[in-house]
Length: 142
Length: 142
DNA sequence: CAATAGTTTAGAATTATTATAATGTAGTTT
DNA sequence: AAACTACATTATAATAATTCTAAACTATTG
Image (tube, rainbow over all chains, first blue to last red; front, side, top):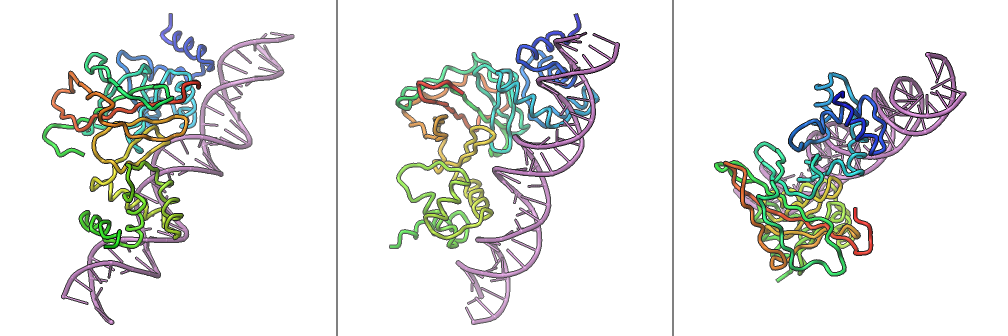
């Protein structure tokens, strides 16, 4: 079976029509071993290059947000200038390499569960996320 | 002694000239019991109202960033649309109330230290921050 | 109090994101 | 497989957040 079948399936599941652009986007996003972190700009470049075909910025924004709303992508905000998306949508933690501006998944086993002893009264915890900022050892920190 | 003396001092320490606008800003920012979370927009409004005098957006941006660079303010990014600053610059964790869009400091004693068992090799950990998103109990989560 | 170095300001420029409206296309119907 | 329809894509315009600019202003120094 052609490798795109599952993407077409996936798009249909989510209620999106499997158009050429969206299938290309899926290949860039989901056709990989490891989870993948990207900015919208990264993604536009990668799709244009890999598929050597231009894709409109608006399409990328719309489709990324459609995937996000349906839970196939997750937004991670580092600071006001750096917003990433992650193909790993489960609750998990991140390293952020300040030297390379790279976002790296934290293996579930490499960090102990966060123990919150006291929550805001009357509220339910929806998510707990840890961001660990790292940098080269021999360098002044941010 | 006039209440502004310490702000003038503080500004001088940081290498900023104690102009009228900056002293006003300091009053809004630092003249309070509890730590204070705000967006740039919040701050402009508060200064204008409290001091009943207009202040330029550019001045607020410049001065906030000057304070941030010198370590008197800390940026906290919730998602790409919500960037907050915090007058508590020590490493600490936050609750984010998704109902009210309010950022709340987490008391140091209310959360156990985060235990990171394995770091990226060759890198030094600069900061570890936990963001706990909460919402009203009887409400569908984000 | 004059000189100067740094500051404030309005508005222009820039950047990231979203909206728009015309054109195009996937999927369905015939 | 032609044609229909609903949804997509696109270039561009609009909006929003932030930064830049250059002229007018002000705190400090001598």
